View 1 (tube, helix red, strand yellow):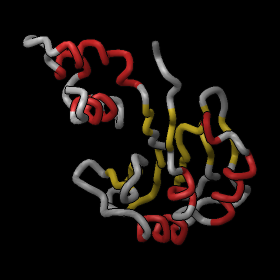
View 2 (cartoon, one colour):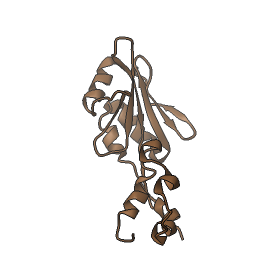
View 3 (cartoon, one colour):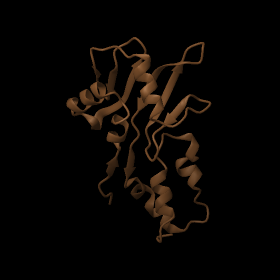
Length: 160
């Protein structure tokens, strides 16, 4: 029997690094469960992408100052132009111009879904010699963030 799932997104930690006029609008929209990403490109209006729609977040275009303020508040970008916010699953992708300046940011909302290991709990607890977790849910670096973290916590508990 599957138990209910708990979803955690720590959205406030992401909103806190955005300009207030953008974060305030996201909060006003009051649809965080369906929020997928926030897109901010230099010289364009910021927008939020939801599961079934998009919404403008401001009537003010994104400036270099907006982008610099956000990038100063997050971790450094790696070789793939991705950064994050410490202790969250949120990922921020940078778009750079030919001079290597950041001219756009896409903030993808990361969510941890707890309770998903119930689906494979019987396999984990059976002690089967041939149960291979990599086959069951893949290597951790080849899936959307968080999808194998719950089974990993389960297999590390005292049930195994």
